[in-house]
Length: 211
Image (cartoon, rainbow, N blue to C red; front, top):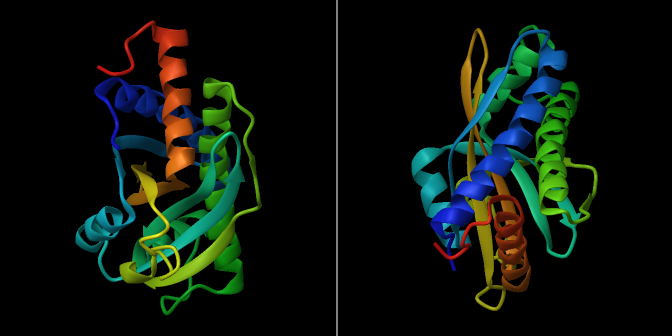
């Protein structure tokens, strides 16, 4: 199960609008222009996501995670390499932070950044796919290595899921930072999600979803 060319283009369009909304909110937080872009997205298995992140992220990672419910449901995560997350939080706080790890204030700041980005994306999906989406308040997670991205239970062969992996580039005056947005859904939810995208394509573009 993957994305057709039209589904990929439609999702990129939807998420670029969402990221634009998130950038506007982040501008208010850091008091300068933050430009966000979505250069790449793909729909993969959990193992493929782990393999990809092992290459692109490496080392230690941290994430902001929240559960969402709709006609499809799952987990939404914003993931950064630990050092990049520290750089982002330092920029938001406007000063130096503990290089050895996140303090409570820094974790709260990172959670708020995740709250802005994740809710902008879920809100945009809700608006443009014309389906209600509710979500829990996001939580900060220090996940350690990429191998800890999913629990053994989540990686069980009996739990077949798909992962939408979206690369998000953060451009500020002082720093360029790359993070990843993930939507983790089971197969029935993935099928419902793709049908919602197909309906969006037909409604907005009059295109053929399977192209």
